[in-house]
Amino acid sequence: TKTLQDGQVCRRCEVNSYQDGEPESTCKNCPSLTETVSEGTWDKADCYCRADHYDFRQYNVSLLNASNPDCQPCPAEARCPGKSAKGAMFTKAGVWRAPGSFNFYQCQVPEWCLGAVCKSGENGWVCETEDKCAKNRKGIKCFDCKEGFGSSACIRCPETSLTVLAFIFGVLGAMASL
Image (cartoon, helix red, strand yellow):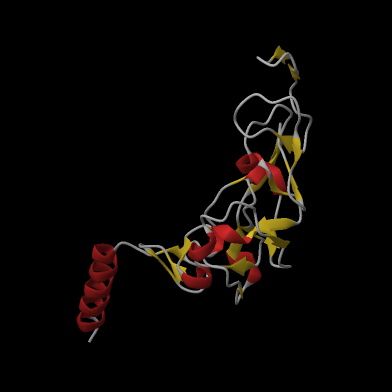
């Protein structure tokens, strides 16, 4: 607590409330469907969408400067951990989306698309922002193999020089037996 010039007492705001920067004697509630990470919040910008909602402003450039979060229900293909992720949404396994996109696509083989990797942390869920593909995979819907890997299983390709040598020795061996 802190005593203000007019003699009123400034106190730390409780969770889900804030003060507008300057110490005040009262706190304001966060907008609908939002909450704060902890008590003592000084700015409405620290009111984030609750779990199972995401902030649409992050995916619509025309809304970036809007003062209130635009909390929308989380799509079925996504994970929306809420305040710990500051209103972001993360792709679930078996689904792919381009970075920054709002469109989700089912993967041809669900095991190829790992989605965003999320772990439970001290203040809630912590998620990597980029979607992950299975080992040795990349690209749209994790369909392509990384450089040096091939076949539908994306296994390591044999060294080109060894393949060519094996072919030459095979041809020479076949000719010698004639």
